[in-house]
Length: 341
Image 1 (cartoon, rainbow, N blue to C red):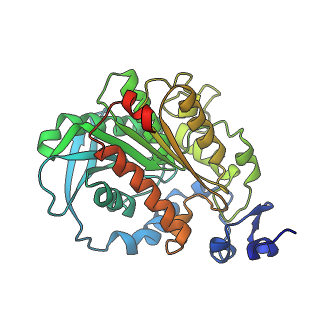
Image 2: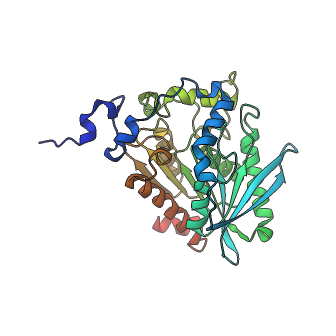
Image 3: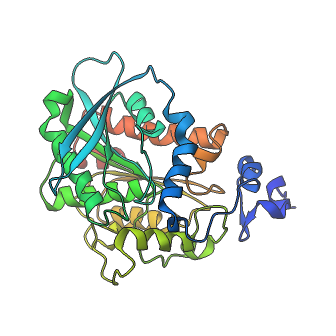
């Protein structure tokens, strides 16, 4: 006998015959449809995101102190950063380079996101929150080069920032997850600062969009395969050819050896799910320690829409615990890490 969950019995909670997590069914059913190309109106997209995040951004957070700083970017541009530190924390702390999401086009805008704050508090770390240049005004490679410049700056100014240059993690969600993976490739190839952990949360890694999940997730209410095509066109330029560089789309990197230990989070109803899982598998094959977590029945960035659900809380607690463990394990090397990961 097969027991159906309540969510399976309601047609409205199915996304292209994909089962929605029972805890998320009501939120999912109430989501409005998105435009075919959200990037057709960039100003509107950014304004909508600002409005969505305003209640979370403006809250005075007594848990962290925030310093606004800036550095010179790769093109002589100014990169604004916010440096978060747990309130009252003394001494030298581990560091986190936090790269926000938003399809390479929007995100952050006015301040450190809740994710940057949570990382700061949970890991007891100095978090550098980077306002990298955004497309379409600044297409690839401007944004990712800004992120790498911030990493180099962070390591070079470790003393001033009160962080340990040998304990720096890089993390971000969605486009920020793709940028995090790219920065790790760049740091390896350029012999840059050592990164001890990469947290790739629902990462956007592959412009080819040839996975099963990219084809399967077509629901207009959530991030879908067709929308991702517009994301990549905006970031790379509408005339981009078939030979996208690996620093733009890390899934295209042919050699994943020598990269930092990784944590990869995916969601079952996310068109990006398979490229995240494929990247995790390829990292593993390259002898990189990898921890993975998948959230079945959840869509891309579902936590922002259903923050009070148990599944959202568990997902957030899980990646924050992995970040904390990576930074508080005494900075052990990859060889030892492989023994217990």
